[in-house]
Image 1 (cartoon, rainbow, N blue to C red):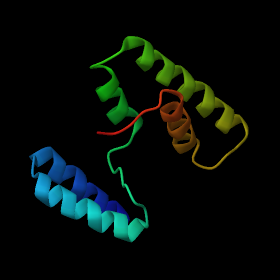
Image 2: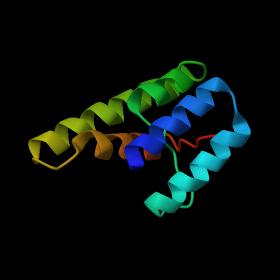
Image 3: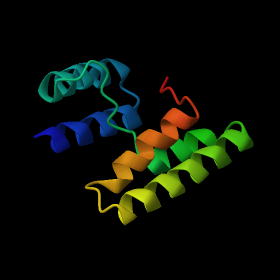
Length: 97
């Protein structure tokens, strides 16, 4: 159910319907028990945003993501891509608008 609702949120955002997107995000937040849901957060989503800005910040994000991902793989951690994404976001103090 969470994946379906996350997909709906993404589609609504792409269509530009802010009111319905906010309502869907509120439903997603209720289901996932988080205050600020980010259904779009992925490596590619963040890179698209970073490419429009500071090149040094983009490179730092990529560097931290790669190192953390490799370390998590080596340590045989579950969901290394999620851990790497969170670490890279923290390294550049990434905030979603």
